[in-house]
Length: 229
Image 1 (spheres, rainbow, N blue to C red):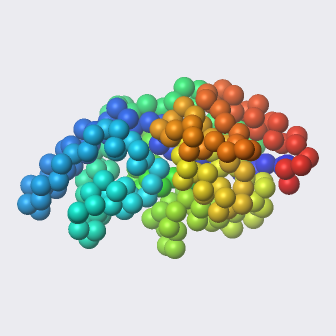
Image 2 (spheres, rainbow, N blue to C red; image 1 turned 90 degrees about the vertical axis):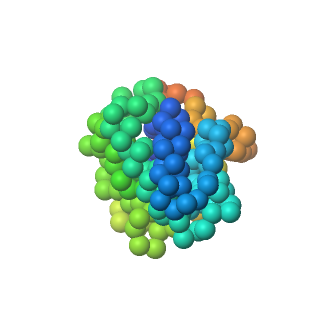
């Protein structure tokens, strides 16, 4: 297999917002309730974390099933504003060895991309604050026309770069990342140190890792496997 492009999920893979999520939701919901007269209650942190990896509308539909779907965008903007503020204050966390590993892949010639269900402004805030923006190519996000999920993002990367499915790898921590890889027809590598559970990304042929320092060796083995093409 000649791997040319590595696509990474963000929250739960490169970075975790766990320390700032509940406060962001609490403040955003308070402002939303004040302006709309609603009485939404802030979900528990574990409820919010269980939704990370889904597109915003699905997150709010699952957390607030009785909420008018026309108001998802308003609440989503309020949540993202607070998350971005906290990211820029340094209150999130880049996972151990992420910077060094991403830098390594860039130096040895891999094309690196982001495949995230997070909004473009959120993703850009993370990669800019932690200084890894310079290692990644142009971002495709759900804000793009006709792009509904991570699978569409991966297929867009294939289209704009001209690579084939087996030349790209999706790296993430959630079932949504695994399903995106399936949609794009590319291999998937699961990160078990993120928000997702082991069971949701474990399959017969799954390749899993728990620390980014191990990822270069995994990619090297894949590169040398003649059956993966």
